[in-house]
Amino acid sequence: MNSPSPVRILLIESDTALTTPVHNILLARQLIPSFDFTSVKSLGGAFQEIERRRFELIVMDLDPKEDPTLSALARLREVDADTPVIALLSDRNGARALDVLHKGAQGYLLKSQLNPETLPTFLWRAVERHAHDEAIRQSEERFRTMIENASDLILMLDAGGVVTFASPSTATILNIAPGVLTGRNALDYFHRDDRRQFLSLLDKAFDSGEAIPFVQLRFRLKEGGWLPLEGKGKIVDGENGKRCVLNCHDVSHRVKMEDELRTLSLRDELTGLHNRRSFVTFIDQQIKLAHRTGRRGLCLLMLDLDGFKQINDTLGHKEGDRALIDAARILQTTFRDADIIARLGGDEFVVFLTDSIENAQLEVVKRRLFDGVDSWNRKEHRRYRLAMSVGAVHHDPAVHRTPEDLLLHADELMYQQKRERKRAALAASNAQAAAHAPVIDIEAVSGSAN
Image (cartoon, rainbow, N blue to C red):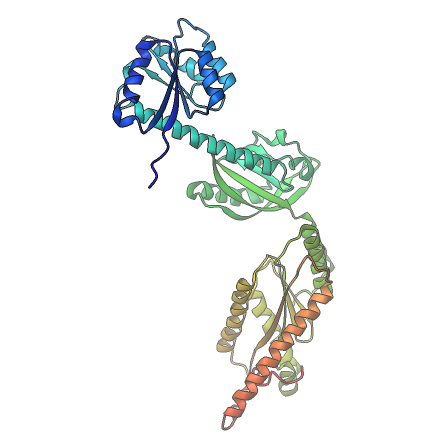
């Protein structure tokens, strides 16, 4: 196993009374493998060594009485601003320790503190602390560069909701300069009906360290009105403590579309679901947005009732309407409010999942649907059993397809499943000695023309 590399230390010494103890401690036999120790007598010699090689720590003795302005330390920081500096002070100069820190030293040691027990540990910790601080600084610089070029609205908030950073995109999204928001409480800009919920989510995130997975907000614009936003938050550590990075995007276009759909009352009269016209209008907008943003994972599900014609022919159209209403209720309880559910006509239904979803997640959704149908069949005492066939298709933003193209493809996949279920039902029927149950089994007659 490789031993860790020794810590490279440059000692700038002019007062041997201060530096001799350091020499004696670091050159002790047991510490030689831990420290690569170089000493110079002057600041000029230090500059030559710094040009020649990189050090992880500089130890510099200082005498504020001979150098009241600490100009030597200032010159050293001008030449090398990155390497941490530890100042050595005589006990009589301890009162100047804060001045030394303000001039750029990362720490200081008094002569009385120079002993074999504490000095090595102090130096190791100084190097580790600087490496940790440097890692945080670089991470924050990368993070700042990223968010300064982001198109979404990004706010950094403290635990009370005060904005400590606002991305440049606030100017384009909110028509507010980033500097105007900085230092003000974000809650002052949120709709009063949204504040309590957001503050609760913010408190929980700071207490637990967990993310805010989803938040909806209405942001007050300076010209009047409210801008609907959706986003999420994440707790991060920074130089000034924990912050919540709130990333939001403008959803006014979608909200406007939803309002228009509601205003037009484009609903199916029987089930109350969206009808074909409103559904096609909505997914057309979503497809165009996916093409602009490259968003993947949008999914459309086509469904119909197996054996619906059998219900109508055997029990009448009133019972058929009842089955359609029941199917609509099952779909509404299975899918989220944000998902778009529509009845296209007859016994055909369609669901558009508004969140990106992968194939593995899709199978979970389909299983939840079938479980909902099974639960309905167990609870309701009807003369038939409901069953559904499903065809699912994902939208690829790299391929231009219209809403009708997606519906047609999903319809083909649905009928493929229907044919497979028909073959399975016929095989089961042939294996039975007789079928005399008075209940109409929709799954058994799923091959009937709908």
